[in-house]
Length: 397
Ligand code: PMP
Ligand code: GLU
Image 1: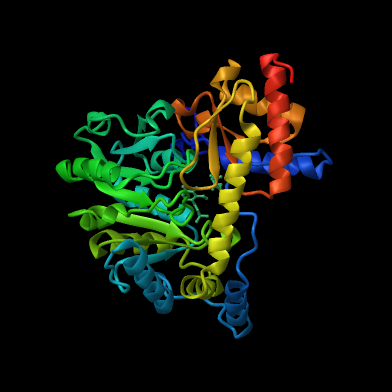
Image 2: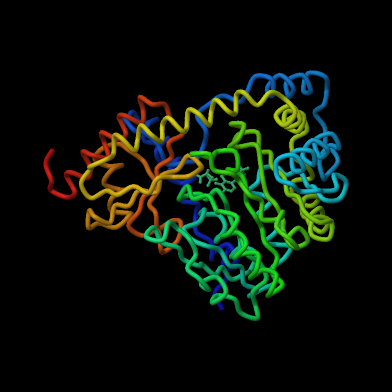
């Protein structure tokens, strides 16, 4: 029998398209190419000053050692208050919150904790690239449930339940959604909740973009719907709302029966989140929200700018994002695949964006643009998209 260096679990996993493409764009730029990268979802703003000051002060005063594995009590307290205030959730800070070294780690923990080999995890697609791979790494079976732009990315009636089998254990739901920018309404969430209750499934609810909303939309937490708190793991983090991607700080919240088992995974892998980053997290949650509001306002303006600049580009249709800083551009009119358009734009126009099929098969024919970049960069990016699509479609300007 042939021996493999790499485990079969890891061999089943694909690289992260979002991270890989961002790395490729950075390498091209380092080699002197004029490349604009709108591939990774990462706010381009600085972390608010009061958050940096809190972490720097903690570091300076020697707060540089391991902390309690579940997170420092004052951060768990601040998270519990935030969940009560913003999300209508009553979470026990002692047993119902796990502070994480990044929200991504929380997805990995949940897959390892709640899926046995062959257990199924349903996920509406298009969806963020890491869900599928982390389910697979844990030995689970990832079951995509497609949504379509023609339906405003709503699940078709009965579509979620049609994918439930006796092996179904978990649903992963991400609202606002990366990569489409869709915000799930209370009615849509109730449809998911009904399936979870009926088939006794747990739901990992990824709310990392909850603060980035447009047009007066409201974020609703699935765990706040009747009977749902007991079966929901609410995932959130500091990366997007507070421009803290490099700090690696996130959290999971839920009933102690679901949160406590995850602590062992943290003890054996990360030990705890970075000590002084946790102090920064307290400052972020308790401090002035003006800097965050200003970031959301800037994202809103950029969305308008792009909608305007990209209107009328041949081969392109745009679904107006309701939240997040992503646009899922429909390039099916170009007659090319996601990968062909994405490669063409990178090679010929120096513009990196993530091919839509990285977010699931139903993302074929789309490319994801992250508008977490300055207005001048976005204006130039729009010019490159237009130039690239004119060449691909043979339509001159
Ligand atoms: N969930 C979604 C939907 C994301 O887009 C990201 C982006 N990285 C994460 C989770 C992970 O965030 P973090 O930086 O906290 O690991
Ligand atoms: N979540 C961001 C994205 O989708 C950052 C990269 C990643 O973690 O996938 O681009």
